[in-house]
Length: 475
Image (cartoon, rainbow, N blue to C red):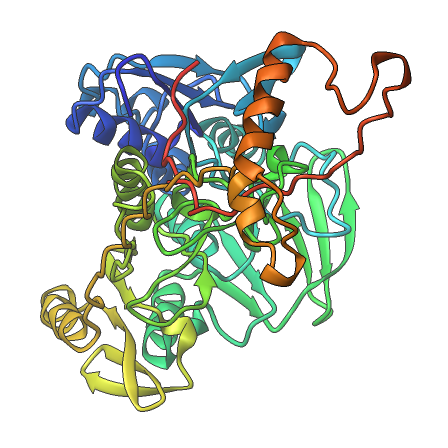
C-alpha cells in the first residue's frame, strides 16, 4: 500500500488495536480509521467477568490506554457499522455516513448468545460482554442479597461463579452438560468441580430452565430437575455468535464468522482481511477445514498477521498457522489449553494434571489443571509434533502479451489455394485504405447506391490473465 491510502479497522477491541499497532510498526504512513461500537477505547475484556464484576478493579483500571503508543489513529467510537460494500470499498455508518477504504480489517468479535425464553426485558437478566454489562451486574448485586445464578458451564460461566465466591456471594451454576468444561477432559472437569465444591459454589448440571418467574425484587428459575432458584441477578453465558450482521449483502460468506483463506483474506475480497473471533480460516498446521478460534491470544496474533498480509498483498502474504493457546485462573488455580482439543476422538493422560487429545493417533491438543510449569514443556512438544507446513510462495502472474489484430492481407493469405482467383490483395488493400482516408466512395459502388455495411461481431482476442493487485490504489 502507498502513502495516502486509507485502512479502515472495524472493531475497537484488542484485535483492532493490535492490528493498528502492527500497521504502524510496519511503517504504514497512510490513514488509519478505527471504528468501535462502544464509547470506550480498547480494554482488557477478560476482566469483565473477573475483577470488574467483583469490584476489585474500576473501569478506568482495565483500559489499555497506558499500553497505547501514539498510533496516529482516527478513533470513531460509539459508532456501529451498518453495511459493507466490497464492490465500492465503502463501509456505511448510521445517519447516511460512508467511509471509503483501500484496505479493510474486520475484527468485530462475538456477541453473547441469547437464551430462548429468557426475559431479557428484566434488568436483572444480564449478559457479560462490556464494562457496562459488568457494572449493571454489580448494581443488581447491591440491590439484593439473594444469590446469583449463571446459566452456562463454559469458561465465562465458571469464571463468574468463582468471582462470586471470592466476594462471598452465594452462586449456582446451571448447565446442560454433565460437568463444567467437560470438553477439556475429565481431569480438568473434575478439578473444576472439586474447586467449586471446596469454595461452596453450587452446581446444577444436566439441567435447563423450564420456567422464569419475575417478581419485584428477585428472579425465579424453575429448572428441569425440579429445583427452584431465587436470584438477585441471572447471567446468561451459554456461548456466543459472531458479530457479522453488518456484512450481510456484501457477498462474503458469513454463515459462521467470515470465511477466509489460509492467509486471512476474506474469500471474494482481495482487500479485506479478517482477525480475531470472527475469522473462519483453515489452519494448515492441522488440516484444510476452516474453523473459528475464540481466544484472547488468537485475537492478538491473528490481528498482527492480518495487518502484515494486508500490507504485503495476497500474492506475497503468508498463511496463518498458529498453535492456539488459552488460559484462565479459577480460585487461584491455573487452567491452560493448547492446540485444538475439539478435534480429538480420544484423550490420554500425559502426566499428572495433563490431558492429551488424540485424533487419528496424533496428538492435536493438550489441557492442564494447575500445572503451569509442566504445561510449558508439553506446549513445546506439541509444537514439535505439529509443525507448521513449509510455505511455498505463489508464482508471479505472467505479464500480458498484446496480440496484434491481423491485417486484411494476412487474412487473405489463409485462403486455400483452390479459392485463389489471382486477385491482387495488396493493391486492393492500398486502394481501400486510401479511399477510406479521403472519405470518398469507392468506384465499385456509386455514392447514390451504397449498400448497408455488413455487421460483423469481433470476438475479444484471448490473452494472458491480468496481474492481480493486492490492494487497489487510493481514491
